[in-house]
Amino acid sequence: VQLVESGGDVVQPGGSLRLSCAGSGFTFSSYSMNWVRQAPGKGLEWISYVSGSGSSIFYADSVKGRFTISRDNGNNLLHLQMNSLRDDDTAVYYCARFDDSSGYGSWAFDIWGQGTTVTVSS
Amino acid sequence: EIVLTQSPATLSLSPGERATLSCRASQSVTSFLAWYQQKPGQSPRLLIYDASNRATGIPARFSGSGSGTDFTLTISSLEPEDFAVYYCQQRSHWPPFTFGQGTRLEIK
Image (tube, rainbow over all chains, first blue to last red; front, side):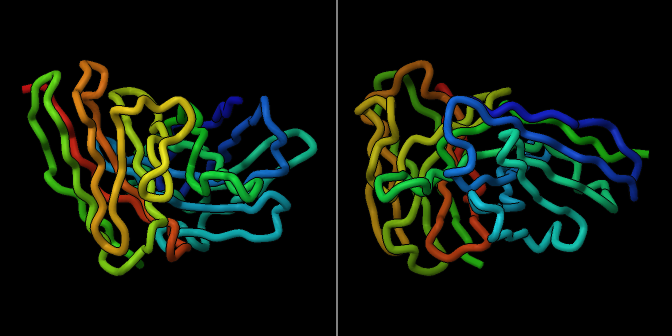
């Protein structure tokens, strides 16, 4: 069971970036997925959720209207389109599986990727 | 939005000692609280879910308790690999999912 993020880079304020997360070792479409970020030296901040089917999507207020989460269950991929990037979006971005696939799940973030670093700087 | 407040911010203990970490919610989250461990340069790892259930592969020295607004993570006898940052997280009222600010457990 593994999640691998990619797409992190250095980008100027106002720019855009697309992150991806590849899932393997589990039935990707059966699980909700999330993006969680961690600014340098700071704690964890949940930023977005998508249900297994993609029909339910939620965002933190800090990214609403600027970021878009999506998933491609055929290819076991999760994406985060990030627009209008700001300095305070600088962080390590983790994708995290939400274990809600069955009545016996933990309903917690049980699998995390290694993270991909986004730096917003001029 | 539910705010989770963890205390202490930093806990200094020696291997073999007992660690008690607290998480207080701004309103009741019933038992829908999880704990995570994060070591430097690593991703978070799920330790405890629904306040008191150990995740798969988590050693028995880790235990969670509490309900409502007050929760505790206890490490019964610290091993060298337990020194890390610990976060609590609620799923009672979401979105948003919220995390506490973390407790750093350091070697004394």
